[in-house]
Length: 63
Image 1: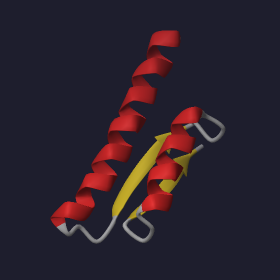
Image 2: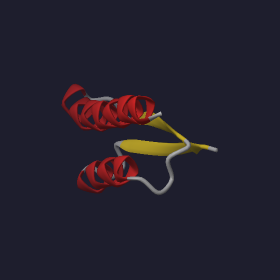
Image 3: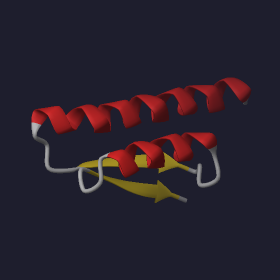
Image 4: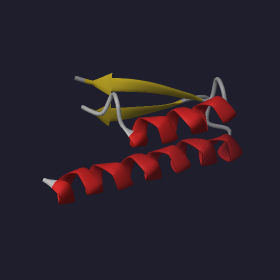
């Protein structure tokens, strides 16, 4: 279970970096889906990236 959460965590970090890098390539928006992680450090990292680049990225939670 820990390994699975760690993999999802790393994927979320990668998604956040991808979302920020999209600004350089003139993408209008990127949708990052976060599976079952509403109260997690992963979400906090992604939200922090979105605050720095508002209007570029949207986030959707899968419940």
